[in-house]
Amino acid sequence: MEIDKQSPAKPRSVPSIVYDFLSGFQVATVTFLLLLILTWLATLEQIDSGLYPTLNKYFSWKSPWLVPEINGKKVPIILPGGYYVSALLLLNMILGGIIRIRKGWRHAGNLISHFGIVFMLLGGGVAHHFSERGNMAIFEGEASNVAEDYHEYVVEVAESKEGGTGKIHVIRGRFLEGLTAGNPRILCFSELPLSLEISGYQGNCQPESELINAPRNRELVVDGYYLRELESNVETERNIAGCYARIVKVDGSKSDPFILWGGQYHPFTAKVDGRNFTIDMRKRLWPMPFEVKLDKFTADFHPGTSLPAKFISDVTRVENGREAEFRIQMNEPMRYEGYTFFQASYGPSGAKPGENMYSVFEIVRNPADNWPEYSLYVVAFGMLVTFLTKLGGHLGAASRKRNYAA
Image (cartoon, rainbow, N blue to C red):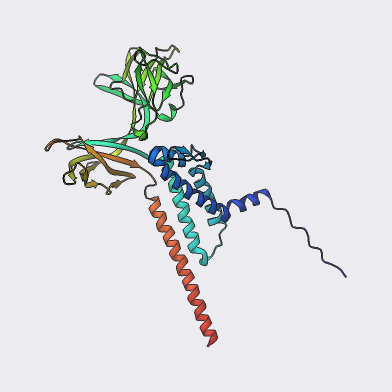
């Protein structure tokens, strides 16, 4: 009597094991739970820390790990950053929810819904890396096409010429951060006869006289002043950055150091090779492809209080000679060409009747502004298809059962 011997199962390859793990339900479940916990903790922490710092801590690509804080006290656990949890969920949805999922008309609804979730996660990534936030203040009767960034400080270098200013050369904030006193960097301009050596960058500081308050950390003193580091504000848009700089000429010689500070009223001026230059630090400005004119501002207050019930800005958008009128008010922004204008505030404070008012708009430039909305439509459509498919299958099975009984 012969006994059939079964051939031993082939060992699974490492790529196959990794693929099965990343595409499995376990990873999807854990990532969803982690995102729920991170969102809950971030909501609690932003009460004390502010919205922007909390978002950076919990959901920035710069934060692979984090330690939560509740009521100013650290919670003794280490959690992965929300950015990387979302990236893992995106990978899981692509591998398991789109590639590995069963295909066919009965599973079309599930496939569509997973496409919607992938679209939503991609939209969050695009918004995180490419969106910008700023503000624009406009007086009644005036217009503007430039927004000021909330957080990013830059250094601007321009040549002063008769009748105006030449091309403005901008050093972005990402090139300034991390340039401590002992870690300077020389930044070059191909069109100018000078370079800048930047050091001692601080995200929030103020110039301090060494006679009033002596330096504690051996800060560089320039003309009797140094940059004293301040604690970062909860409302980070109130931070004022500063740094030290030297002009580096083509022959390699350097000027004496000088202070650049975001709160200074006038730029630093210098003469190089008989040409005059201005060097300034300020929040980054970004132009828009259209102009906004404030026609009228209206503020209504609750009776007997100074609390605004609503404030309304009637504006005209001007683009290539064409005009379009809009009304911007609380919870009713203006959206156009990837820009969203929110009614943020107004001024001047305590203005008297008849006094010229100005309106402050928060401007968000987000190329994925409508992606979450579209992704919800896709997910809802997929769920509808799944429901109709299941309903059709149930009705068909019931009909066949009745015909068989008959």
